[in-house]
Image 1 (cartoon, rainbow, N blue to C red):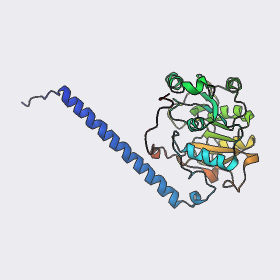
Image 2 (tube, one colour; image 1 turned 180 degrees about the horizontal axis):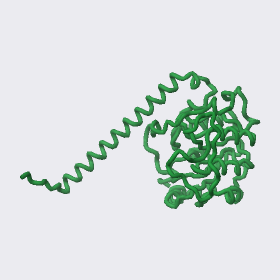
Image 3 (cartoon, rainbow, N blue to C red; image 1 turned 135 degrees about the vertical axis):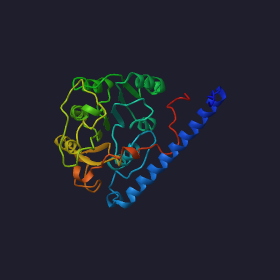
Image 4 (cartoon, helix red, strand yellow; image 1 turned 60 degrees about the horizontal axis):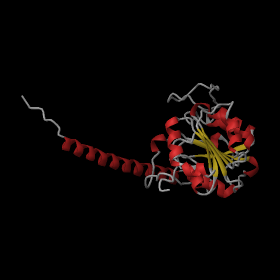
Length: 287
């Protein structure tokens, strides 16, 4: 009978170290594969070679899906006014679409329902919260409270608003139209074909269950935006977020038309999402 080898503490430490090394290598491979895939996609598709395309804009400092680069490129074209923002579902504050704006002189409001994420924000963002650059609300967003959250923050003339709450995104977006930002970044459901107009009914108690049933299709988002004076100018290349510019700032000289879902649809490419470059630093950790 073979004897069973007992793993000693030193062996476990060695195995743990090797696993960490393997994990780091796999992360680098994932980043490399993602970069190659996206670069090939841009090279082969004539749509991305158009100088008016926003999908091809690259910039990933703190955002997950290159939103940093897209946002910067859009504001380069349409300009800014108040340099204030609102982000509904800000996460833990380490990764979102407005942290870069905050660190480059903007001010604004973050709303986050998760308690663990909220604790992280209060800790890591204590400096901008204390000096008034960042207002923070730890609460679940509903149709009944979202406007009051913005009003109480004082940031009622934002240049930029992001909404990414999975299930009820489209319904909350309608409530935020009255604040008339120059740019909206809105999560859409890319599982639906670009010509399909689909929107889940509003349910305050509903959370995303990890399935294809959530939010609204890009066609529905196009319709909602147009009804309120916003034009769909593109999506991130991963098929996650759609970008809407206020119609008085939008033209085919600046962005690719027509401003439709059929023109700008990007399918889900979630497996291609990867953080390229160095790890994100913890905000204000050195202060």
